[in-house]
Image: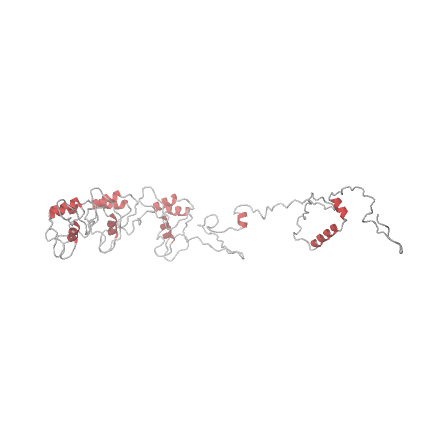
Length: 420
């Protein structure tokens, strides 16, 4: 059976355990002179549990309380019906003053997105400060969200430095809450105009377009402004016209007032530029579009395939095909074909005159065959002379009869001459 440890033994074991090391149900620490490790994990679970057998009827020894606090384990101020002494359900749930949260927010770089898991470690604190949980609680509209009283001015200033402002809409419970989104800040029209003037003209403005201004913690969402001023829903438009500086900045980007007045009479921007479809020639499946209206940008529409005529005749330039036709080709050199052409002199083909159709006449094949037949009908000797062939001189033959001499004839009744 394990020996019963006193509070001083547990405190000594906790002090030997490294700070910031998580304590689980199986965490133990071996002390000099002890036969078995001290189960500090079981102690913490017993003091944190809300079961009937958990907790302490009386508070632990002050030495143990101090050792537990060094590891972020503090007394739970919420008293259960049994009135026992217990630890907080989680060691990270520590009651921190507003000054600590303000100090943590001031150490966080401005513009950093704060989520539920955002924490900041402060010197001298055993665990990081959960500023993400604080922001979610102050933004929550449920019964557990918000504050009954306004936070400390130091915390309000630290929240405002990150774009987190007080929500002017007061719910029925009257609690102090932050705006639903940290980016929803009430900006004057001059700020939007300044942001639009810093944006290069011709830049496509989408819902996510933002511009960072000097001295502003978060970018100015000009894309959301344009979308809201163009929206025809009940939440779109403005009851009154915007500031003239904003109207001029919008016009510089091709965003003009919509003359069509809806029943609510709000001030709105013109809808997106209409893009009518141009006729497509037969056999061409490519759709070409043209931007029209005051918000159209100069140049072809993105993704449109230009035709050959458009490539050769750009807008604003004199046409090349209609007014400046290309010069006609020069007259070709005609070569007369002779009867005798040396084989090393190739004849130059005869070019047809300008304007002659390129299709050969029907009788050209017959003429070619007739020319070939005429050439083949010439004497062989003439052809050999034409080709530069000269026969080799022959030596005189003997008096022997030639094979080509006429045959010897005999008279009937006479014998043939004797053979020599």
